[in-house]
Image (cartoon, rainbow, N blue to C red):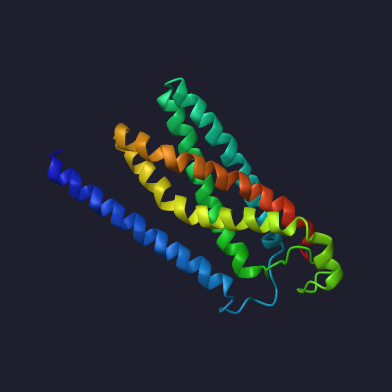
Length: 197
């Protein structure tokens, strides 16, 4: 493949990655605004999706750690399989996440009586831990948005055997992706006691 064609292909791939990122971020933002009406009867499996998402995130964390160990041992085949599996699970996570946020109302951290508001006693009960929760949640969300196109581009470089570019980018994308998957589990464990279902 000549250099001009390779450069054109990479530009096209980058354009697709950025368009995909913008579309997904817009979809999640719109769903968070609860503009679209939700059906009166919500399928019961929907309420299991946050737990499924935590499981998917936790599994991805383990896969990413083993992926790093595999590449350190120069086992490229295993490294690729583990990363592809993590990517597929992360894609499934995204579908579950969007679905859950469409159907399930937001949960407030510390809302013990599940009325959608924090009274003085509820606020006082979580005043020490809520700032930590918010830092973890906000960094999780922000870095998930940042890492999404980086992961896609890392995969492109890896699958097209552009090892120098792949290695250079994954120095940044790998720790961020791992942080996002680990904090996804932490956020679930912290908010789960306040779910109203």
